[in-house]
Image (cartoon, rainbow, N blue to C red; front, side, top):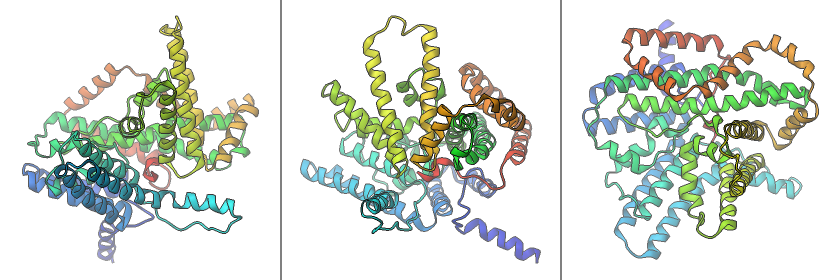
Length: 490
């Protein structure tokens, strides 16, 4: 009997379960990764063995996360590998453009079908009194991320920024590398492909930094974000049923939740890659200390921000055709960026308002006010930027555009400070964790680097104890089920 249960649990580790996809913060992944890294330690010095082994595990990881939709990923990989080689061999501009357009149509077509079909159908249904009905379409996890990644590769080859790799397995490994596959960072080929052929040397410092980032990411995600989510989910389930103050706390709670959730994933992804001897780009840089919205987008989801700038904003003309056209390009870039996050009008509104915010900031800079560089002006700028971003997160989190409006209406029209004392009594731990999430943003960089250095130099036994303490903390504060990362749905 016990043997059958044991064998059943082993089988579950290798079979896709749509109700329980593979997550970095799950026990199943930690168990599999322990086995994986043990074998990796024996093969990583051989370039060929390392590449094939990582590719195979990455495909398995994506299968565990998304089922047989890994075949869609492989289709994109195979098609763009050959298209890039063709682009290298032909010089005719029309033919080169035709192959680029084919690649864009293929990748964006797949993304459009899986992500936006129901959005269009629902809008047609509203216009035709329900003659169209939504289709049950499964959204493959991470399709937006790997679509943007393969597009950047083909466009860079088309622009002759980089030569295409002649090795299929190298390109397949670059595209499927499991730490960044399902939720970023969006990795550029020019940064990652050269690492594949370098001799991998994993030092004590690399292991220390990797473990530190994984622990930090796990605390952000499984302790801070997941605990705050328990309250936020209640409020956003029916915001009109709660007071303005309770909605305000959910607004602040989600502002910290989404940062800790997404940056926590990025920390773990970068840390896991570091343990294997690879470097991924930073994705977050304390975005909530930004003194203006332009700075915020230079600090938030930096791999996406730079992608939108290089492949969308610049392609539309950037700032090359006058200030008016520049503002239009900026607005459209953020509008499309909003739609990339989700097939809903609330994301269009979110992206559009961010675009307006960027335009307003550019107009403000033209005024060249004498007090603009004063310390108090910067502090005021941080306060305004934080709340502008936090208010717009309501559209991001709410179940619908109408629900977002309900929440904001409660905050601005139904604020009752009589709820403060009871809330603090009942939700004391929520306030403590919320405060920790905010305060850590303002810790000077030198202290963060000091903590990293100290952890790296610790004896392995002490690192192991810290890991056990973090795992225990996660178990104490987590909800009943392992919570997926927010950006898995994108």
